[in-house]
Length: 444
Ligand SMILES: [Fe+2]
Image (cartoon, rainbow, N blue to C red; front, side, top):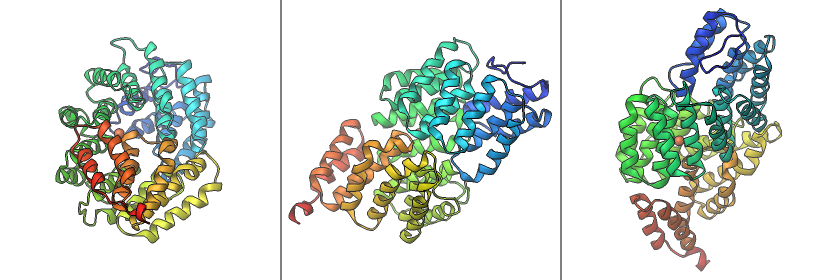
């Protein structure tokens, strides 16, 4: 059996199929181009290349978009009829688990492959993605740290391991080491959008606005073009602009880089669009028909597939004032509660309370919104995403507390924020507003 570019044996005898597979691998690593195209060419050359089918399946499945489910299943059916070695069979089982909604089982299975075969960057990255989508922060950090033993200086793919380790370290609060490993990764590979992103998170969490803006701007030649992750790094830059209270710049990035085509149906892009508009909405910025146009696209997606996405659909609908339609998303989520799979618990424990909170907030029921968010904020990582993404919960809670006149709670949340981000004009302003908020609940 021949080896791929990382030295892992693969079950194809076709040199051409292997070449196309090897073309896809760095694209997957750095989120550049369309890795499905070279995988398809690989499969044209060798339709019995099981790992290419499996890789195709998990790439599509981890978009968290139900739209691709038929293609995921077709790819897995094709893989099932191929001759697979032990490692490839483990990939198959892990991908199948993800496709069937057993997200934790899948994530663990990919992590176990990476432990057994530390140069298997596909398994490591799929496991890393799984950890992200299921909120397993320690393994998000630890599996890449484990794999670093197999990549010495000069090795192909070392940057990717460093970049994943950097993001995991950041999510676990080890900002200094996250910064060092992320910067080292980008030095090795300027197109590594994930490593750039890990360092952007460090700046976001520390509230280092100027350093974050400079980092993203300086590295943008490596990730801004032909990259399926560019919109998310631009989103991070927009967050820093909001932190600096420069709403116009944030909105310009929304229009030019994050959501340049209001009809695009890429879920991960739509998440960032909802999340950015909601933050601007909290700030009282007039966003025109952007919420409504985004909500129209969310309504074309099937709700009840992944709770994190559902909340962001509701953000767009609630932001647009379309609360009846937000209730239809909520109803789909409730129906999904007996669908099986890990999304069930994500929805019941985190997604539904938060959807109720955001609907309450949009309806002006600040006490309900505040209570619901604070009920689940401490366990919200269970439905996935990053600290920076879930920060929308804290921002909405403090805004609800200020508007509702819950002064002590508003001050508590604002003080927490200011401690994390002492340089942030946004945090400073929220602190001032919290101090001026009324004492309505005390008088009731
Ligand atoms: Fe991020």
